[in-house]
Length: 238
Image (cartoon, rainbow, N blue to C red; front, side, top):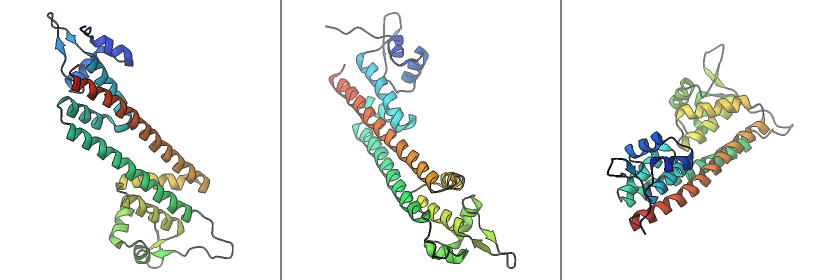
């Protein structure tokens, strides 16, 4: 029994979209090309409807650009590219999760109050801090220009002096940089650390970060289920 052709409005209503949005998705090759009626109107199939479900679900976890690339690869039968895109996104999220764990561990160390009998951490010169971090002093100066570090200046010599808070920021920045984060993102995170006001607030920031990662992981799984449904329809030619 032949399936009834679907109209743009049929696909649009399911997701609260406009019919123009559905047509735009087809024009952008997010949906496969539609057939045409004798009068020239677009005719969609169950596969088109599932492709739209897949894209909207994938977009929540993978982002618009990657979701678009995945669907385009699927329409062209390029499953190798499709799976590479999916695998790369999952690997990037795992990398972010690992980075979060590293930052959390660093914060646990850096935000623990020292016992009363211990002296506070001394201030460090740029050379001493660079040595501790295994970096070149030029990198610390670059971080300063990017707004990540705020060293003080010795009034007598004019040399940079890194007080304990600046040392903490440098160590956190080092962890994030090792995790592949660009300098503007690191600056935003360090700014949040400065504004947090204490260990409890810092832990809350990490809790929110972990929750965002969990939501993306769940959205990726949901998108994968919808994509599997589309690939099945595609392979059956429906």
